[in-house]
Amino acid sequence: MDWTALRLSLELGFLTVLLLLPIGIWVGRRLAYQDFRGKGLAEALVALPLVLPPTVLGYYLLVAFGAGSPVGQVWQSLFGRPLVFTFEGLLVASVIFNLPFAIQPMQRGFEAIPREVREAAACCGLAPWQALLRIELPLAWPGILTAMVLSFAHTLGEFGIVLMVGGSIPGETKTIAIAIYDRVQAFDDVAAAQMAALLLALSLATIALTYGLSRRVGRRLG
Amino acid sequence: MGSRDGLAGGSAEVCCGLSVRLAQDTPIPLAAAFACAPGEMLALVGPSGSGKSTILRTIAGLYRPKNGSVGVDGEAWFDSEAGVWVPAHRRRAGLVFQSYALFPHLTALDNVTAALGHLSRAERRARAGQLLELVHLAGLEGRRPAELSGGQQQRVAVARALGREPKVLLLDEPFSAVDKATRQKLYRELAAMRQRLSMPVVLVTHDLDEALMLADRLSLLHHGRTLQDGSPLQVMQQPATVEAARLVGQRNLFEAIVLEHQAPPGFTLLRWCGRILESERNPIYQVGASVSWMIPSSHLVLHRRDRPSRGEHENPVPGIITECLALGETTSCVLAVDGRAELSLAFSVPSHVAARNRLAVGERATVSLLASGIHLMPPDDTPRPVG
Image (cartoon, rainbow over all chains, first blue to last red; front, side):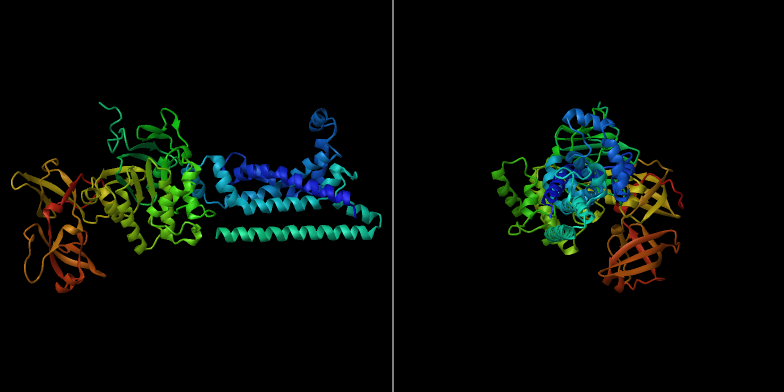
């Protein structure tokens, strides 16, 4: 069992969810409520990581983050270390490839709130941020929860992009999914089986938790 | 003189109460102007798609038309010329939605509390409780909307709308989603509560009877345009135009020629289908001019077969019954004047009267058109048989 890889994966998962929460709420809410030019294109871009082969996305991120790219250079000058093959680079890539898993359920969650209920919040004198906190977020909660769980589980399991952007540096970019592959390559079946079983249990537990919570929320809203 | 006159409704500039003027061609045509005094209930009536809900949403700040103004107590909420637009959450407008739009995750008490942001935290609970008591929901404070009946949900919505101490109360077809018995009860409650309300109240409805029962004034809308503004009874029985008459459901609409205005006894004589009708004196129409006229079915008197009754000397018209439908306690009849199907008079009689007079399709009958019920209007554009 590679505990360092597990801890790294969990850290990556939590931070990814933490960063995606505001992004998903902002983008999902805009896509749900507002009509704007290029909305179709925006929705297509959000969905793109779903259909793109992970190695293709990983390749483009590698190119975009590399020391030769403007993004890589700005990062290097700001933080004094490169973006590729680092934990930070992995985190940024993780946020990008999880966009559809975070935004789409949140968008559906906000869309499920009737327009009149949102208008009633304004007529009650609630400013937009008050309406968001007291009315919209509680009502969109099932979608937001689904988004968080999906992004977390997906981060734990992602392999292709992590390998392309992060490589396999122990303690820095070697996640548990990569560690499993690494153990299988080394014919260490026991360790591979242990880690695979742990990932399976972890995934099952998160999914069960989501279903249980969203059913409770559903009952509450009647 | 006032430069803003000239729009229907006239009194669009008042210092207190609500005044609304709206004008736009697309996407929803609007040409409405009306005012509503404090304590007054104005009914906006029109068929579906007449723009009445859009007007209500504009007052609440949920819809922004291209041109116009909305003012409450001298304060501008919207003025396209001055570029004023106060967002919905800063307008003190209480809106009861057609679907009630309660917050499904909050209890009845918390739904009302949500509208009490202007009070201190300590005061909110007590005030929300008082409001729920006002709408007869004491004891149900802890229920969520899904655990309340339609009528109870409507009451929560009313309490919530009153919570903000609104400067104007807006009701968007608030009785359309409840059964008839509940509706009658809610009518009585609203009528009783109105005596305690001091703000202008605007009621949107497509139900004329509802407007007649509850409202002080009625504004008739069609395609976003104000057709007529007046007391509900006046608009129903004395519509300004043939279009308005059709909208308020008047069926007895005809064309005639003005023959003479008699000073005493105060009649205007009309020639209609080869006979002369007496109507109340109305000298604004010139002798020889063609006019439209209508009579509410309530002003048609059926001549009894056994003995004559009061009013029968007024405009007797014989014909043949072409339709006779018993609808519970009343029977709805159509009389073809002189047997001519294009001159059909619709009227209703109590079913026992219809039975006693043996009213049936094909039978002869005579009705009197009461002169006080004959109402003259400018001639209709669409061609109809005259003289």
